Image (cartoon, rainbow, N blue to C red; front, side, top):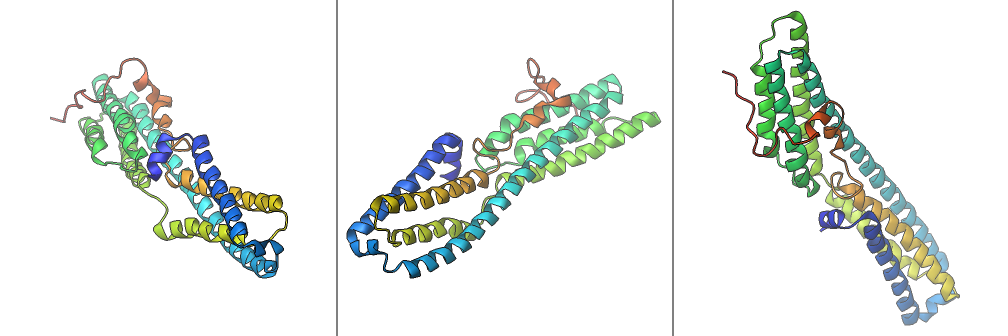
Length: 278
């Protein structure tokens, strides 16, 4: 449900649903509480309610801050992983410029097929939290085979070849990290603390008596809006590859890799794999 909302609603629409829904429910709950228990408006229990509300609010604020910072760091890490993987793939292409024409073209075709498989086949699955290793396994193997088929002759070729092989290893490592991160989400215990905490805090604001109904509704609505925006942040940051505020595949289309996206694709679905070494 969470992933569906992120992928099918804009951030603005999602904010209207989450924040607006929480504010409406909170205001409605306050009105019903005041109507059912009119004595709460006198504020006779404000001292006790205020202490409890302050204590719970402080604890809940610390939990929310911890969760949001953690999720934001997770999003930044995912962006760094994607950038590192794309950079390593681009480095293979650059190093292959030192190879003979046939070997260079074979490596380029293999890298071309890999980046197209990442963006066109694997990325849509990652947006749903279902990253599939097999979607790019064959293409990555083709990159390795294209390098294994080449035998460097000169010292210069050997140097660039070693760098290309090292970059291929980085691609494989960052690929695994990227796919793993696409399936990560907030642990269940933290989800209970974050969403359950809102269920505890908001009803407490209903019991804080203020004689003016308008001021009380303003108080309850303000607290609800703050909690709603915090929960919205948790929701959009929890899945780093889903929604509008997500990691983009653009690094695989930039720099040395941009040549693979100019005009008709030279590889991708339906294009033959790089030949295996003989």
